[in-house]
Length: 570
Image (cartoon, rainbow, N blue to C red; front, side, top):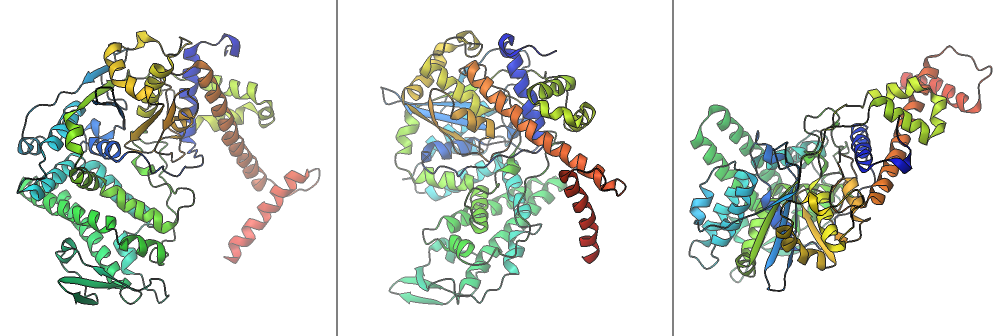
């Protein structure tokens, strides 16, 4: 029997939220996505990208990273990193912050290190590697290439996962296949002459594009007459990208380090060129994708996979390409291209930034360990009982049907965690608002509280904490960000639900109860929809008899008789 709302303890509310988010995840619930804000500071955004690491089989690769930072009174940049479910110590009961130490290794020593390392060491490697880069060195270009290869190798598993999503995005075909089948006679591109950069001139197998020479400059024409040739450049690059990932796969299967090193080197150079191409201020790739019908041949809308039986329900790489409000298909494909070269963009951007050296000299980084979540959830009868108590209208469907519907999506074990974004927001909110103990957010939950306070206080005092995340926020994290005392700037949400455990620090119980009520309403909506479908299926298979039917039932009967007719006509 569930306790009355007035007598419920905090852990029961948390258990309820764990249960509801797990169920809604398995119902594949998606709320309205949001458009990603564009004003997250570049340093924070790119630094977060570079923290993404890990090879296949390395659990660290699956974790989501959230980062925030601010400058304190001494001009020191305080940065706090929270890794989702980072701790593998089941007995850990309190939050713990680990200060990252920067050593004096050379860039060569860092990039020649292991491909897969613990997250704390990877953060130190990022710090050391960026600090060791010298823009004035005679081999600065070689250093940039080494950095990009290093981060591609560390992040290869995620890179490959993102690259493969392009096939789903393009309706079961690779992007280079879509481009290869494109023909267009429509006037779409006004004629302009563009100065050809050296990186483009150096690409292999470039198709012939109408050109001219003005002084010492080589210019190519971008117009309706040449757009097909420009598209061919992108097609070749994407096809080569596919082939080099296959070469890496073959080298791994053959256990040939030499072949893998060669494939990775070529793949890295290709990714760097693709980064230049899609980031080029002339906007050639953007124009091709958004001003022409080049992607009009994509007939299948991108949909995230059914993750209800996924062994790792928090590894939501597949959901990053959910279409944003107002986003065209071409813009979505362009965003896909940006995701696969994110590491190369980050390295290029940071190494071109003259201020980065000063920031790195005055940096202090803390990595927060969050205790693992309990696996307990409500029992199936408890969920059913709570639904019937909150929404009496569900009784007309029958308890047996309700239990049957819930059973197909229910698991008696919570497999999620406290999400990195939620944990970080809770910490900022706690130190910013100094919440009194209300069942959530107590000083005793933080083992080395003063050390954590020193790192996070500048962020809390800033008034609007900017949080960069290695992935978009889930719906719960995005909702939470708008209902705390502190103000947050988040990277947007894809609107999807994931198994979600509330932070134990910095979130008032009244906020969690409001969230819980919204989740119950959402479960009521999706379960009611399933029950209506169940009722419809019974009517469609029942003997034909209109006597005694209601208007609503007659609608079901009419649909049941029309559907076979349409099928026969087809």
